[in-house]
Image (cartoon, rainbow, N blue to C red; front, side):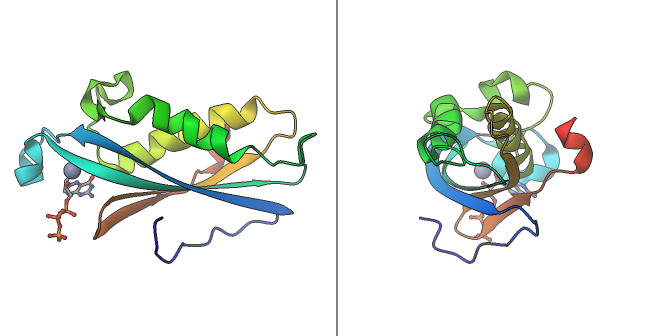
Length: 141
Ligand SMILES: Nc1nc2c(c(=O)[nH]1)N=C([C@H](O)[C@H](O)COP(=O)(O)OP(=O)(O)OP(=O)(O)O)CN2
Ligand SMILES: [Zn+2]
């Protein structure tokens, strides 16, 4: 999938899970500094999500891989990122998208009894550009 080196996130959880998926979306960055990216264009975004935890659920999963994909793919695939309410005031840059994906995944994980945690989100926007998002302690409050 991402076919690249994955930056490792330091942690002491017993289990670490990684899920790759991708989705296609359009966006534009309405800032003068964004140059050609002010014009609407599309990407196939490649995402890697890292989840950690000490306990498994009754199925023996930290979290079902497919739920991680669904939480993001259903929302963004074949959409215009600028149309989503989370990007009403913030431009849909790779950085903001990675942050929002972390928020979506962590909201899902919070509902699980075994309380896994999203440790890292990587979003690759082009073959030469990607962002790594790692939450701060305050992001979990
Ligand atoms: N810090 C950021 N910089 C840029 C972002 C971004 O989200 N965060 N986004 C863009 C554009 O959306 C663009 O689609 C991607 O830019 P870029 O990597 O420059 O794409 P190129 O294919 O032109 O890059 P090459 O260096 O030719 O491979 C711009 N900047
Ligand atoms: Zn772009």
